[in-house]
Amino acid sequence: MTDPKDDLAADALVCGAGASGLLAALALAQAGLDVVLAGPTPPVAPGRTVALFDGSVRFLQSLGAWEAIAPDAAPLAVMRLVDDTESLFRTPPVEFRAAEIGLEQFGFNVETHVLVARLQALAARQPNLRLVPDLLEDFRFGAEAASARRVGGPRIAAPLLVAADGRASPARRAAGIEVSTTPYGQTAMTVVLSHAAPHCDASTEFHTRGGPFTLVPMTPGADGRPRSGLVWLMRDAEADERFAMDDAALARLIERRAHSLLGAMRIEGRRGRFPMASMSARRLAGTRIALVGEAGHVFPPIGAQGLNLGVRDVAHLVEAVTEARDRRLDIGGPEAMARYESLRRADVATRTAGVDLLNRSLLIDGAPMDFLRGAGLSALAAIGPLRRAVMRRGVMPQIGAPRAMRGEALQTRAPSR
Ligand SMILES: Cc1cc2nc3c(=O)[nH]c(=O)nc-3n(C[C@H](O)[C@H](O)[C@H](O)COP(=O)(O)OP(=O)(O)OC[C@H]3O[C@@H](n4cnc5c(N)ncnc54)[C@H](O)[C@@H]3O)c2cc1C
Image (cartoon, rainbow, N blue to C red; front, side, top):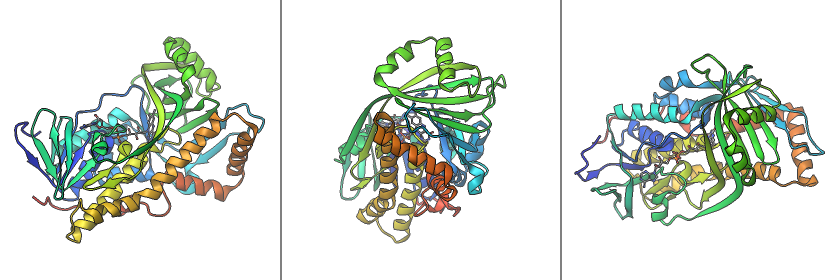
């Protein structure tokens, strides 16, 4: 922890200490940069888990972070899609098995606050990483450096500012980077459930008219009962009534919605409530600023894409920055920032558009859309090569994946200062 009275200078200033900010700070520090990570510890979001795919797990391994997370992470070996829309063109369930593409599992599911806590512990031990637990304000972007002031305190300056400060991103706003936003009129309910039947390492996404209702495997509870995380997207109009239910009534409703797939259910802990929207920044980089995670892109939790995309932002940012440094270029200068933008643009645009399309296809109640969705799912069930291609692409982009996710070691270096 740094002294709150002193002005600070660093190679990189990371704003926001959520999962994306912690990963960016750790990765840049391990690449040899002198890093300041500023932001308070995020509050625990009730019932929130995050499924991390194979590429993200590899990246966490390359940072030396995975070992501490693994005991609390449940493998995801099967992903099942069930059309529960009652449309005329309903299809049988489609199952994706990791073994079909030569993986033991697609990835692992872990409680978001556990992931953040383990990354924080690692960050606290990282030698050339200083942690500042305050919010930043008064962002400035100059010719030589970006800087921001700790709320009520001195300034911190660095040639590169990494905005990992979430969807409202004050850093992005100060840099004048515009966003486009789409509200969906949907709310997500998240809750941890324990249940009678085992989940067998399978997640099940029921596609309903209000949006997906997804059960994702978790590690067993302290009493040994199997557990799953529920992410239930519903129309705003339905949310108040469901949130008003007591735990026992809600657990019965959830069991019915899940067609008793996991037997009798019990709600463990508090429920989380999140309004759904998608948001896309027009640019992911600008003068001395790079956006990572939800500062750059937000979409509904369908297909577990959000943080996985954020992890790839971080992995590509480290590539762009280390390439610039190795060529003796300015790490926050126009070339490095243009390189970051070009590495990220296609991946972010295709994921955002894909999730948006799937979500809208459920919300639009009409025969043509139902037919198209049904035909798509039937094709996935019947055509093995198509199914395997979709699985590989869902786990990681097949072209242009970050080096650290293709099994190449992260470029580590002794600190520059
Ligand atoms: C219900 C739900 C389920 C999800 N499931 C999955 C999943 O299974 N798989 C997946 O990959 N993704 C999933 N996601 C998406 C994933 O949770 C997000 O992508 C991820 O949490 C975003 O992390 P972040 O660090 O970018 O942003 P945040 O977690 O929002 O962190 C931003 C941080 O910046 C800080 N901050 C803000 N302003 C300032 C400031 N001025 N100065 C300093 N700090 C500041 C905030 O305090 C906060 O701590 C899910 C999302 C939801 C809503």
